[in-house]
Structure formats: C-alpha cells, structure tokens
Length: 254
Image 1: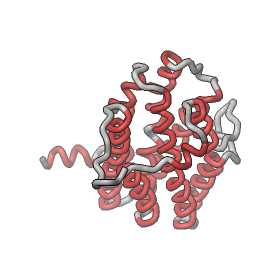
Image 2 (image 1 turned 90 degrees about the vertical axis):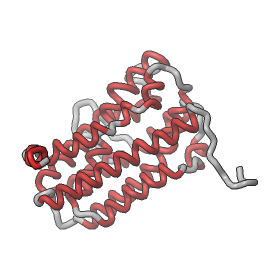
Image 3 (image 1 turned 90 degrees about the horizontal axis):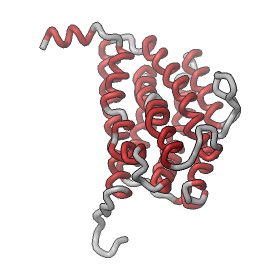
C-alpha cells in the first residue's frame, strides 16, 4: 500500500484530478450511448438541456461569487471574468472563427428544435439529483479554497468536449439530421471548443493553488463527489426518460 501511495504522490495533481473526471465521464453513460446510436427521440435530449439550463443558473451565479471571493488573485479573477463574459455573450472564445454567443440563448434554441418551448424549459423542475449537483457546485464555490473550486470546475467543463465531440455531434449528423454547422446545435459546437479552453485555464491554475498535500487531498475528494453527482443526475434522467420509471410519491400527489 505504501508503494502505491508513494507512486500516486509522484503523479501531478492535475493528472490525478483528470483521472477522476475520466473514470466518471458521462460520455460513457447509457443515456448518451443510447443517443449516440439514434435510439432516443430528440426531445429527450431537449429535456436534458432544459435541466442543464437550470443547473447553469446556479453555476453562473456561483461565478459571480467566485469572482468576489478571490478578487485579490489577479489570474483567477481575470480567468473568471473572461469565462463569464463568454457565457453571457459579451466575448467570443479566443479561437479563430468564433463569435460571441449568449449560451443560455443557445440552450433555448436547441430546445425549441427538440420540441420544447421557452416556457417549457423555464418551467422544468429539477429532480433531486439535479438539485444535489447544482447546490453542491454552488456550495463548493462559496466555501472551499480556490484550488479546490478550480479542481471541481475542471472536472465539469472538462467533460463537455469529450461528450460533445465523441458522442453528440456524430449522433446529430448520423441519426438526427443536423450537420455540424446547423444553428440549432450551436450550443454543442460552441462548447466543444469553449470548454476545452475553460477547463485548460482551470487545470493550469490548479497547479499553482493546490500547493499542500491537504489541499490536494481535498481537491480529489470534491472532484470525486461532483463527478458522482453529475453521473447520478444523468442516471435520474435515464430512469425517467428511457426506462420509463416513475418517481415514488406520497398517495394523492402527482
């Protein structure tokens, strides 16, 4: 056991964090595997995006809190300001050919194409695992040291390029009639690029701010917890939308 721990201690902390992310990567989830094979109605992915819309509402609020808590750290403050500006559509990601986009509008645009109105999206209620994931994310930003927060964020935005590039974009073209440049799926093409950049910034800063064994250990613990919650939120959607299971409620409540 001592040898294993010593071997692990020689692995850079960013690699350990990314290993947690990859073990729990939702591109492997049966929900997305079914979508990749064209086995799900497009509207089911619309419901996923509607839930994501509500998760993002908490994530973006936490960005403002993150900016406030760590304003004294120039590199962290500027990274978060740039990230938030990109999410809100004030700034394009720093890659050729990209234009600014309000990312919430891109979510709504896809949901319309999938058969959900803007009102449907806004009135979607998050089930328990989605609430747990959203509130854990916000609580981590509100209470944890900067390096731990960055580690958590890197495991989340860092999942999007693999999920989108390897699973969703090929499925859109092969099974659902959307070419890569289609405006309806611009949320996905934008995040296929944007979140590579966002997670890279977060991972780079992790190296700087996870500077004690205790901080590294806490970062790995939080990374594991948020990745498990992300997986659980997709499992919840899979049970309801694919397996047709119903939520167990008290008598008389629908």
